Image: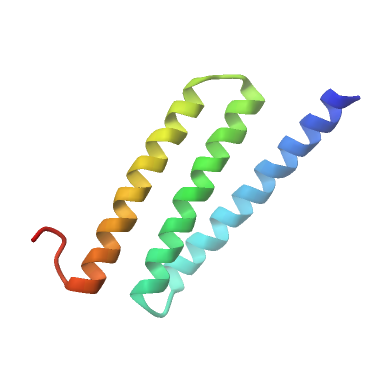
Length: 93
């Protein structure tokens, strides 16, 4: 019984994360300002990271967790660089 509930919950989480990823991609393409696009990019990498974690839980594969860690680090660096560029106009001083 618990395995069925877990399988259903993970399947629902995958669907919800894919929908959230699609909506944030839409916001990134349509955002009226650059700040909205950076926020959408931040949301996209967070959703992709969580989707990798859920897929790793479903498959029982450790490599998806490592991929999620790489996405998290690269997404954080990208967000910081984009925010710094929007505030000062340059990334490296």
